[in-house]
Length: 454
Image (tube, rainbow, N blue to C red; front, side, top):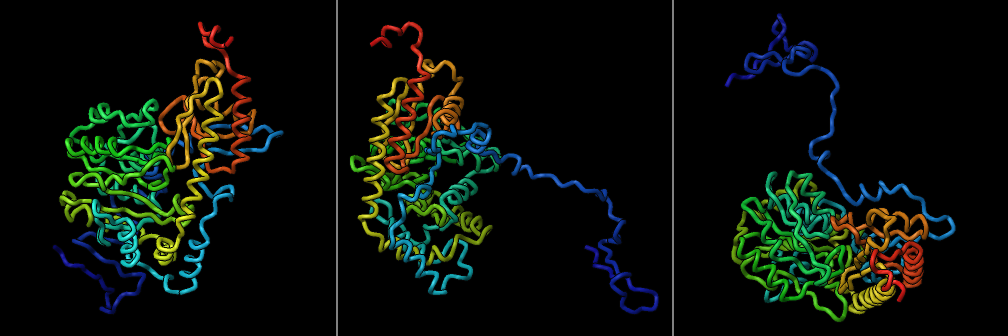
C-alpha cells in the first residue's frame, strides 16, 4: 500500500493550510478534482424510512371526519391507560422516581443493556423454578417496543420472514418491513376466544422463517391463552425449530377468572425472547422502560444471540437511567392492592362494555379475559350503507362523537377495537351512543325479515 505523501511548497517549509493537500496512492485530493461524484444536491430518504409504514396512522390519519359538534368526543381508540386520569400509577411508583432523581446517582450513562443492579432486580422478579433467570439473561430497553425491535433485528435478516398474529399489534409489521423482513400472518379464531389456528400457522413455516411472534395477553383482542393452548403452540415451534418472540407486555394483566402463564415456564426445548416493560402493568407508558428476558435452557441461542443483543443495544446506549434507578423500589414496594384494583376496574368495564354491545343487533363482541381491549364484530350485511369497518367507525365519529379503531388497522376487517380504560360513566355513555348509531343504520338482511320482526 502506498504511503501518504505530503506535498510541500518550493522552499521546503511546511505548507500553509491553504496550499497543502494529501495524495493517497498517487490520487490527488485537491478539492474540485474528485472523480465519481458530481457536485450537486441530491438528498433522498433512505430505503428503511421509505419502507416504514404504520397502518394505524395511515388509516386514522386518512379518516377526514369531524365529530358531532353537539356531543362531547369520547375516544375508545388510544391504548394509553393514563389519558383520562382515572388510572394513576401507585404513589410508591411515583415516590421511587422522585427518590432516584433526588439521589443524583443516575444522571450519567449506564451500560447500554442497563445497570447490573437493575437487571438483577428484573431477573429476581421474574425468576421461577420452571424458567430461571439471572442478570445476564436480561436486556433493558427503551420501552417494550424497542425490546421487540431488538429481538427482530437479532433473529432475522432481510429476505427472511416472521410469523405475526392476525389480528395483531401493527408495530410488528412496521418494524419488520422497515428491516426488509417479510411478514406472514397467522389467524386467530374469534369463535374460539382468539386461539391460534395452529394448522394454518404451521403451514406458513418455511426455510426462511426466522421467528414466531406470540402476543399473550393480546392486543387488540384482550384474549388470554390457556396453558394447554400455549403448549400446543410450543409443540409447533419445537417441531419446526422456530424460536419464539413472546410479547408479554400485558403479562399478569388478566381478570380474576383467568390465569396468565408465562410462555417460557412451559418449555425447556424452545428458545424464547420474552418482551415486557413497566408501561401497562404499572400504568406509566411514557417512562419508556422495557426488557428482554432470554430463555434458552438448551443453549440453542448460544453466545451469539446474546452478544448480538448487546451490540444492538449499543446503538442508543440504553434506556433512561433515572427509571432504572427507581426500578428496585417499583418492583419491591408497589402494593398488591394496586394491581388488584387496576384489574378489578378493567374487568368491571370489560363486563359492562361486553354486555351492552352484545345486546345490540348487528354487533358481535368477543368477551376479553385480560389486557385493556375487546374486539367487536360488525355484521356488515345488516349495515349495507357502509362498505367496511373503516366507513362504519368514521360515521360513528361523525354522528355520535365516539372513536373506536377499525380492525383494518390490525389486518382484520369488519371488526373494531374498544379500549376499556376509560371512566365507567364514559364507557356507559359510549355504549349508549353506539347502540343509537346501530339502531339508526341497522337493516334486515335479505331473507331475514321474519327474524327482524321478532
